[in-house]
Image (tube, rainbow, N blue to C red; front, side, top):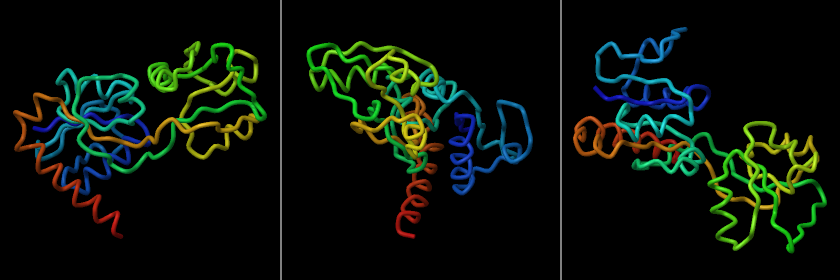
Length: 211
């Protein structure tokens, strides 16, 4: 049986539709089922529904063989897993944003509010810029408006929330999308289960690109 960790929410729903198209259906996934572990009728696959940030943890420790996770979660967590492929959906950007008209004081550490301190630290370290990281868990846009931070580092999809709060994008840190990851041991010992999935995914995604 192949154990697949899916993030709860829209990303997981899109991932399941892709796996279903690959020939890994699970009737319980398509019903109003509140269970967190769902097994397909043919017992080929078991889906584990977990919090998005926990997907790489389940995969790293072998509770799941493969999983679907956003590139942001993967980079922030630094988990010891294999990144197998870019699934092409869930696309957005990690950006630096600040109040409109912001002018940076290069003589002082830059105060950065973010949910992603590891990514922010790496990004500014590469620019040799001293920063003070302010870790927040929600309403990141509020931080510079109240003087808590100079800028924010956060995921941007449409940018409408930034505009409504009179913030503007200064820089793009990196592109984000859903990635397929695998447990290192599973990739070795469950090759017969994982390789057919990879081959089918590659075929479907290639067809989508050429459509």
